[in-house]
Image: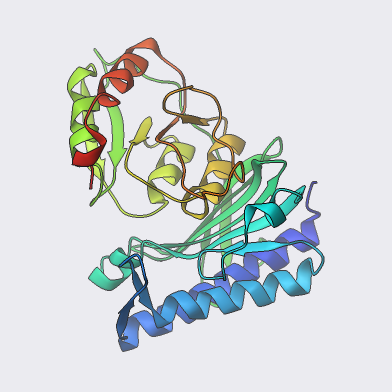
Length: 292
């Protein structure tokens, strides 16, 4: 399903508006609760959740929605979905709490298990609010939003983005991005086998966005994530010419394949290469119990 331009603009504007609600809470202060799995939850998570669900109800009332903050939906129901929205209202809640700005609002459309459209909105970037979005087969874009209007015609600057070819590491080091908080031992095992490279740790889906923009080359993630953490950014990376691959099979990562909504370990990349595939195989040998 290809979204028409008017619908696309309304979705982009709606996600940006939800981002402004999140920023209002970010600036004024907030309490932190904890969910059953001990992950943090703030007023901003729920404000974004309600704003994005209202947006999707207006734009696509007949399409199912799965959000991190929704009630659980059993696989017996989900397995019949041909198309659905997958939402992470606030990816990087710990970064939001830490006040470092590295959090995003994520909205994806999934068709037959494949993320085909995604919006990743970062409202607290140093340069202001930034949105990355893409439709698989149609391209990916970065939009910097100025002021209160989130449209291509007024108040924003938009440009196409594309992954870069993997450079010759003898001339230019590979750029490898990783999580600030999770899976450090496996990440380091991966990097030890690589040729010349530089590393950057950053929160939330921003790691994928660096791949999509051609500012980074590899993002290995062997610690647990959920499908809502990755689907929107996977669509952006794919639309930009890259791939998000299951770390063991090296096949494109899929959604809604079982009762569990946990992803396998994965790697996001702009280009396949035997050297990083060898490094990934070594990293997979790290004891999974040592990942945090």
